[in-house]
Image 1 (spheres, rainbow, N blue to C red):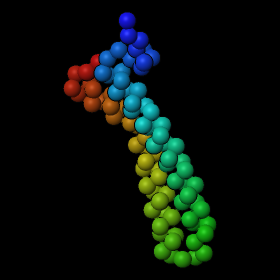
Image 2: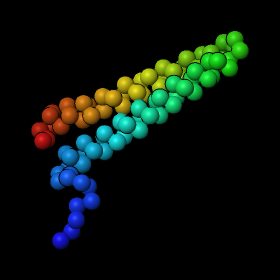
Image 3: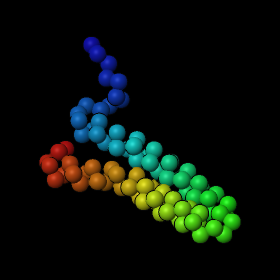
Image 4: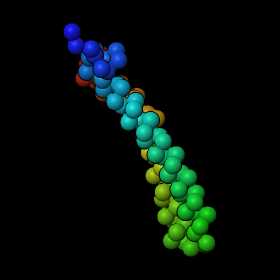
Length: 86
């Protein structure tokens, strides 16, 4: 017999759920790192309006990324419900 390497995943919906969870966690981690980078950019801007605006954009994109990472599994659940998946 062949051993299932996916630890309890027996259908495509379960596999998709595990993938989305992993990708969401990676996005959340990268977003957190980008918030730190945006803070460093802001602190080292030395009053330059161009560098401050770059730091603000980085912060906004990081927050958007974290929100998408957090709601990723919910988005997949909604899509599965719309197409009639389990």
